[in-house]
Length: 355
Image 1 (cartoon, rainbow, N blue to C red):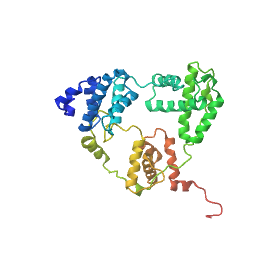
Image 2: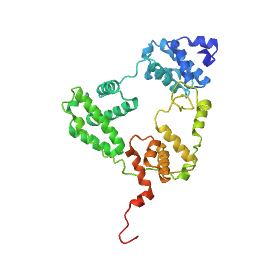
Image 3: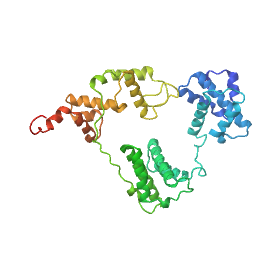
Image 4: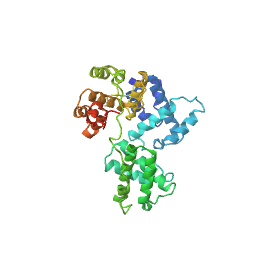
């Protein structure tokens, strides 16, 4: 801890008091790996140590540590010290680290407060252990289950799942289809089917209501791909020597951190992008800097623009599909709609000549 933070020995000795003292070295290393400045890390460690002393003096155990306990700690601290903007984020960081390393148990949902918590938790375990789904998909499925159960049962405790019917399933999906796009409605339908099959497998339902979930119509080739003209694409800061730029980033600019992801946040905490929308945000900012305002923005705009340009320059759909890493040629066929010269050759002459 001393190597990273540069704290004076007398300060280090003071930090060794309290319930959190055995964990401060690991927390210090975590702060360093996440890229926090030394001054920020020093303040955080002092805050953690003070929280540990307060816990001990107020007869708490370390296992009692949660958001409510830390709120009580801050309320007491603010009677004597001025609040600082780092306090809440740093204490959230503390809880996350202790939970991830197993010192603390993950926060549990109380059945008394949420009547749907037990069945939702059982479904979460099923998704992780039996279906081996990634965390993002698990979160999407659980969000759908929460909305479905709240919609059907409200605050009824406990929900009588045996009362579910095909009419309930259809009515819920109809409401979702009115609120969301066809693509997102398909995700909701998949999640609801998975939940209903789970209820059937565990004997909670006697009939397979998953078959009652309608399949939202989604016509993959119904629209046109959104793209920019080639001259507009040239105004994004994409150098021709992308490989060399990437090499320089990895060698000289990428912050040192433990994550294996290529691109990481420059500001602490140092970590990879949490979701794909971060890339979309970067593209939108680049478009704004270039004073470009296409009606549709985001990362896919660049892919569509490249594919459209290649098609108009004579590339085949197979070549474009290979470049874009499409697994199915049907995904690439949508670009045929913007190949105007080829479409003109397919169009029969208008009876009586040009009108």
